[in-house]
Amino acid sequence: MQEIRNGVNVHRSLPKVLRINRTKGTELSRTMAYSSDMVSKWSRGVAPLHFENLVEMIKHFDKPTMLIVDYMNKATHLFPPIADGPKFRKNPDTVANQLKVEINEAIESLNNSMDEFMTDGKVEDLTDPKEAINQTLDVVMLAITLMATIEINYGLSIQELEQQREKVWKMKGYLKRED
Image (tube, rainbow, N blue to C red; front, side, top):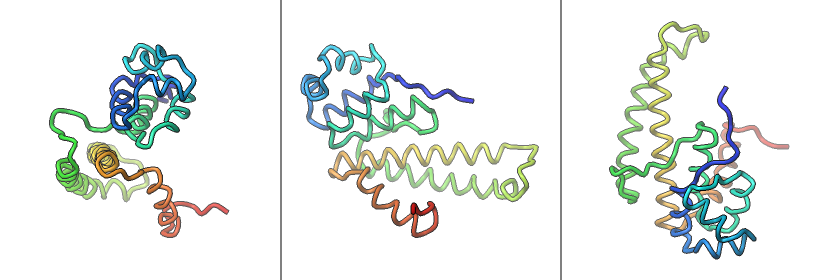
């Protein structure tokens, strides 16, 4: 069983989130009541950011998505990271086009896995289901990247939109309704 880590290094995402939100480390340290040295250590990757600090920190940002995704990826490895390699310009069209390619590959891998999916779970060759997971992870990573890119470029709030979307998912029966 994979362990969930409480403290992770956010040196790649925190400086970007500060820049995107037009906030200086000194401002963040003042509003969070932490020393500038501590915020600097988090930004440089010298000290791990703990979950309690993340929860407090995101309250101070209008656009915290990159930081949240980075933290969740490193803490759990159940959540893919935001794509930030040299292949990606942070333009919605670039990410959207690559996402379309990956969606098609995921559909093909899902189709190839249908015979395994229709069994009782006792399958000897897991090649197709593993490929379905890999392709789905590619789609999720790029979808999250696209959402973060749109949030940054257009000022939308993923958190607000997700909360609204949950109502639709409940109506469709994807999620249980809370009583």
